[in-house]
Length: 124
Length: 337
Image (cartoon, rainbow over all chains, first blue to last red; front, side):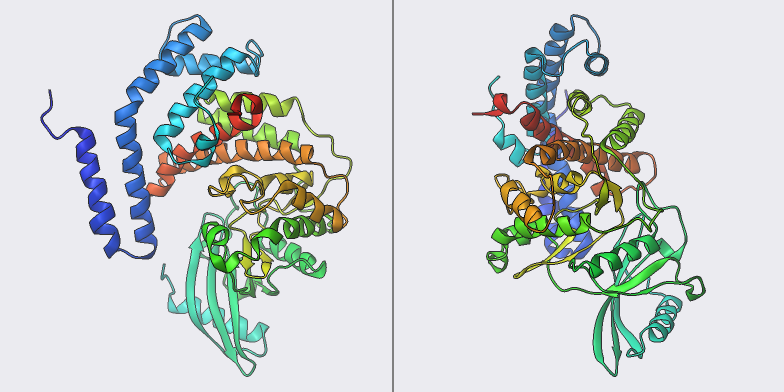
């Protein structure tokens, strides 16, 4: 077991240093890239917090939807293959539910304030 | 960005003073942006006629390199901007197209139009409050004028139908070998609805926030013509509707500032024919998928080509924004609250 602080706390400390102390002293392109860097760390914080559960949920849904076992990457490739070959129709309700849930989980990590996420619903 | 070596400054001054008789010297030379396909420099020409604000767009480092993706040659870009000016489309005035003997590489010199290109400012600042409600209609009218330009004497322009472009984005997406089931359903949806276009027209190819110079009075100039091509005119109208260009103003489908009805009304009023919301929707969905794949491409530039900026790396994580937009577009009933 690793000691405290947790990985999330370490990243949070670095992000807060960039936001509160480094950015005010930077200008132009460097300041812009520092904001992008802080944003990248915020993505990692959210992924460390939510990623394992999101991946486990996605894996369980894909196993059920496809009726076969495999890694998350293998199952996603298989799903792509079936959509492409029309083995699963693009508007199949179970597929649509899965795609919505998987995408909501991804955007919640990548960009929780994105307008398209706020437009969508968590039902279905 | 200050690689203003003395030779470059001297070469530019020599070229501009010869090409524009009213100018005797240049000042305030600074690089605005640099990409894989062009450099943009801002400077002032000074002389008997006063100060002339100018822009140089040229190949990176002045070297003739194949331009990335679907970009046309800089000289072609200049030709099309001149045609647009003749059609009364707001564009910068092209003063001079660089020649081989100029030692500056391929490119051209144009007027510098004052205004704002940053979408967040245009969509939120009070300065543009009066312009905003007019912009969708203006964009429609400008696009109708672009689509009416006769480009039959420009054989170098590519024809790119929806089918061609879908195939090339499919090949690009496949080459990255990273599964995006949402992109798969979008490809499927688009392949089932490929438009038949009777008469392809000239297209701007990248008509969106960021490439429009806006003032409190409205659109002052249409910039960045490097993706100009021939195809379905609805492509240009759909691209400016992609949610990623709305910067949070998501209810205003056209660029975050207007409605599709206004875009279409401006288009029809300026003589554009046969345009419908349905045709625009096809290309909005196409554009959303395209931007999602472009995000993957920019990540590849980080992973494969040594463009190790944190911006390049992070933009890969914007693919998911296009996926939620595609879901909202493809399955609208399920998206209703």
